[in-house]
Length: 112
Image 1 (cartoon, rainbow, N blue to C red):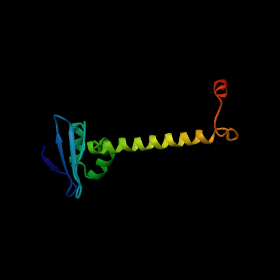
Image 2 (image 1 turned 45 degrees about the vertical axis):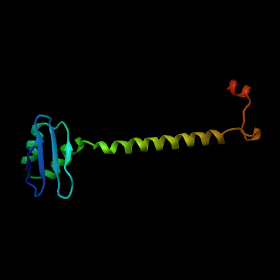
Image 3 (image 1 turned 60 degrees about the vertical axis):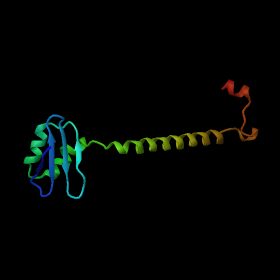
């Protein structure tokens, strides 16, 4: 992929027609990859007088997340699940009959 300068200073873009991948490089940040971008969107990005607006409105929503972020996401879901299970256990434990020491008889459980 060859990098092309946009009409805005220091912003570059590169497009791969075979994979339809677009990479955009802003000053002071690594390139951002976008998947399945039609050729006409890339051409419009090159021709527009306001590439920042065009990028934010038409291209930014198709950003490809980096693979290294996925384990963090899975870990956060695991933590949320553990907290949810702990909260449910706490609610169940406090909802037991305090007069009987929080223990139900087997016959009471079957009748409900």
